Structure formats: C-alpha cells, structure tokens
Amino acid sequence: MFRRAALAAVLAALVAATASAAGPPPVDDCVPAKERASAVRFRAPDGTRLVGVLLGRGRTGIALGHESNANLCTWLPFARVLAANGYRVLAFDHRGHGESELYPKAFYRLDRDFLGAVGQLRARGSTRFILMGASMGGTAALTASPQIGGSLQAVVD
Image (tube, rainbow, N blue to C red; front, side):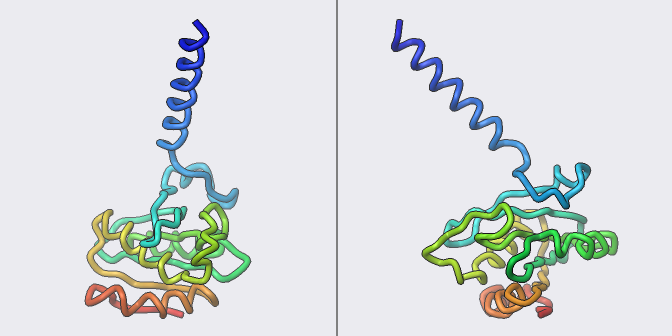
C-alpha cells in the first residue's frame, strides 16, 4: 500500500513538473500579459538555458542583447518597433541575468547566448540575421558575429 502511494506521489509530481515546463517560461514584470505567451526558452551551444521574448514575423531575425545589470526589458520597447516593421525579433536575457540560467564555468561567454538566439530565430523561419547589443551585449554581438556566417546581415553595437 505504501509503495503505491509513494509511486502515485512521484507520478503526480512528474506530471505537474511537465505541465509547468510546457507553458511559457517566466519573464520579468516588464512584459505585459499579452506578450507573455511569446516568451521562449532556448539554449546556448554550451547548454546554458536562456529566456527571451519573440515578437514579429519576417525572414530577417534580429537578436537583441542587453547591457550589464539589466535584462530583456531594456530592449522590449524597441523590439516592438522592429516587429511592427516586419522583423522577427528576439529580446533575450543573457546568462546570469533576468530569468536566464547562470552558467559559472562560462559566465563571460556571452557570444554563445547570441549563437543560441540565432538558432532560435532560425528554427522559427529566419534566414538572415542582425545582432544588436548594448554595452556587454554589443561586445558579445561582435564576438559572435564571425560564427554566424554568410547569413549575418549586420552587427549593431
């Protein structure tokens, strides 16, 4: 009897964990309710779990990386402008910021966050890419740019 109850409790916990992971990830309060459904989880090439908000449509995807001591909220107003002008935009939290995972072994490899963002944009249909970053995000965009290849259209620092 005890084993059945324990098994039932474990199964219930697994179902609850799966159900909560299936929905959009948590994002900062700056993201209004109507855009929370656009929140996405993705991974950098080193496995770091990142969170962002994906807006708009278009074959050109723009990845927006924020400055230090900030999060995706700093880019969200401009992300809306870009999305309204025909771009697919991913404003994301760099590793160790906002809702993204801290990966201590590679904390300063923020270029990998941009590579993960481009992978997410590519998976959503983008074929050309623009990297935009402010401060540390700009440095990360510049560092990631040679790794994107011929589909990179521009880097804005």
